[in-house]
Image (cartoon, rainbow over all chains, first blue to last red):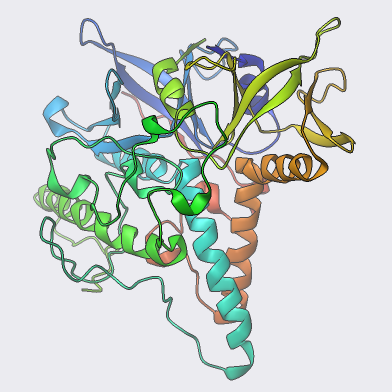
Length: 262
Length: 158
């Protein structure tokens, strides 16, 4: 398949700002060594090159359909981009320290088009609500946070998690479908709340079925973004607490940024 | 430049509301209109030969200009070059309009602008930052003054 590279490089170099850039180590697939690369994140595209000043781009990773995972088993400050599906890759990275790791994981989690799309719809609805409420003087809590109170598989919802949402498998996105695989880590798998339809059954040649026929019939993305956020947030909250716990050994003060709303 | 081809091909197979057989003409001189299955997924426009499973190509729909050419066809111009234009022929005026609309809305940059607008307005109307509940208020990509934002650099010695 031809990826019109010039369009990507043009986009990268155009005036709209970059979302994040910095050095990371990227693991080579073959011999498992790490190579330091300069990464530039813009929209749902992760570019990399040897050095910041280089004109020559080594590569780009399109960030759709991947989960972002902290992978300490790969080494210190390691994380990965896991594309789920037969024959699809996992990109492995390591950061220079925990802070860099944290900030990259966070940035990558909110990078996909899919995520942004859900977020925009959610905010669009909040905006409409807010406009209607304007005269009444009441500020209304977002109705989108009707959290999952019950779930057989997953971590109990403890209320809002003001932390980064992790393990965003693309079953959460109304546009993408997910493969069903055996859950390795429970909180990262599809909630299986919605009936799923196998997109491979869809004839490629025909017009796409109407939106309503797709997996998320009855799914209200506006309402559910909050649910998704809460739901995936639990795993992240836990991981973050573990990470903070290891930091506490060095630093006595408790991280004030973590708001406990539970 | 390397790219995650398999993953992109997998992406191209995802369900999409905008997928149809259109006439497509490339930007080069001498290019003719060919029947292609054109599919919009996220901010990429994939195009396939009618019976094939793997797309011929993928066009990133950022920094491009979509224009109505006539009642049933539209064009997409890339790289700020008027000449680098792809032409698409639809079956109806309505279909043409839908495509133009969808492509414009599909761009990440336009979504980001909407997000920033909503964020600002919601804050103005309610006094609250709607991104706080998701823990993403500080992300560069969502900053209100996005155009002026300094990019964070991680130049710690590794």
